[in-house]
Image 1 (cartoon, rainbow, N blue to C red):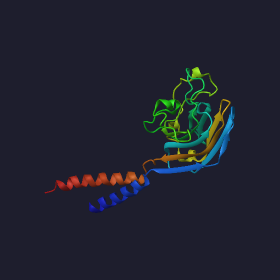
Image 2: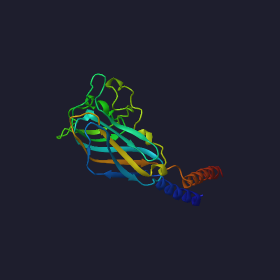
Image 3: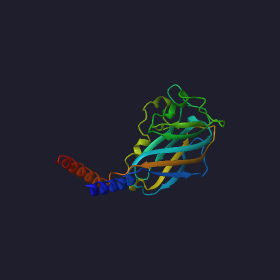
Image 4: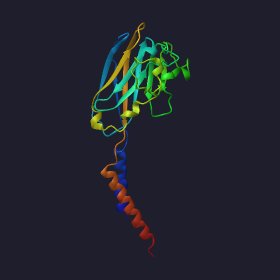
Length: 232
């Protein structure tokens, strides 16, 4: 029985190593001017390799300077599925046609926790959440409001329907390719610049045959121990 337990423990340790989370981080530091009052916007890409297993969580960091935050629309699209609205004219609502006038974002989008929705960020920790350059800082939930950014302000009430959670469960093969960040400025008067952005992808492998084998041996060892204990 000792041999069975030893083998089972060795296999379990191997399975645990196999089952560890895998993280990919990609950064694009190419500076891009976001065309003012132009829905054609600008796109920036990061190439992601084939991942070890399916996606469990995606976060995005974004550094945009200058401009008028209420003008900016941004989304992230995967190469083979997944779409998240990161920004959709922050602060715009039926009572605020222009949205927030702050200048820029130096933020991380993460929908896995209890982070507040970025759309009405002035309702949470404002203005202490601004840095010395007037950029919004901190970790926020993606806007998620999948609405044409040129819609009437009164239309901004559909809620967060397209968040970073849309990438969860995508296979490692489908994750491979170019991930695209798109940004557009939808109103005239101020100029924004994309300084850099990054994407962090965490995967959790499915149980392997090694793990299942280890579990079987541990069960067998437990059964044998039970019967051995009953011997006189």
